Length: 309
Image (cartoon, rainbow, N blue to C red; front, side, top):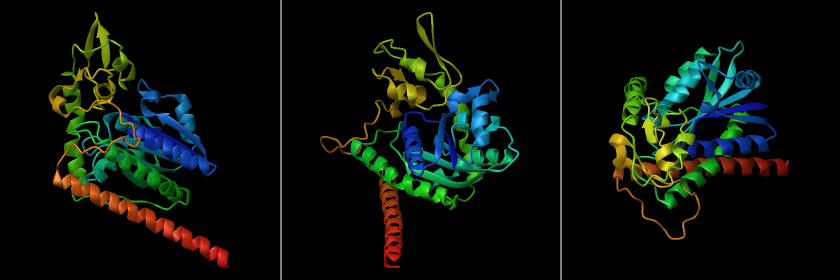
């Protein structure tokens, strides 16, 4: 099977998940291609090489970090530029967020609608908790636990896709309307992006200029200029080696420095005390462990049955 995985990743979490999908599909002898969304946007159309990959794929994955319970603006723009295919294409969606709230399940509504108009049918959706890049910083312990859980889930999800078993995420009531309202983040992010500043700690390495997915950061007459195309993806602020970028109205929520996803030398205390989120995390990990154990039990029972035949 030929698999095409298209993804957008702000600070690396979704890319990490996409890479795991690639390795799992590859282990099952599939031919896999990956495409970063920002790399194939070319003017008002998509590159010819990408369109060839899309046409030849048997299964297409679309991955993104959830922005205000929606797909990021760049992902929706990417979907709008996809050509309408003559033959129906099977697809799946995977996304990441810093919290396991059921509202996250509405993030794909607009994307799935756009894909359907292009004869691309989303048959499965998957959500993975990965550490925040805004609001507060998860402890290294929590980041590792989130990633370890995703690592265990993704092979099971790939097995489902390989066997063409649909996986549907439950949508909340009035989810379409809530998602529509929350898409104000798209234009709000562009407004806030104009408020970004660079502090005196800046080392002028220009890393932010190079890594911005929309080329929104420029240097004019030796000064940093932030344009009107900010996605609020946090890539520049989180990955700045000097923590020199102030993110406008949301600067108190800024998170700086990539997560290592390694076992911390000493245990860290979680930086938040929100009871609702704490309970949501506990429920998420418990449900994931239950699903993993259930599938592994069924797999073992199946193997034992084959041996006894």
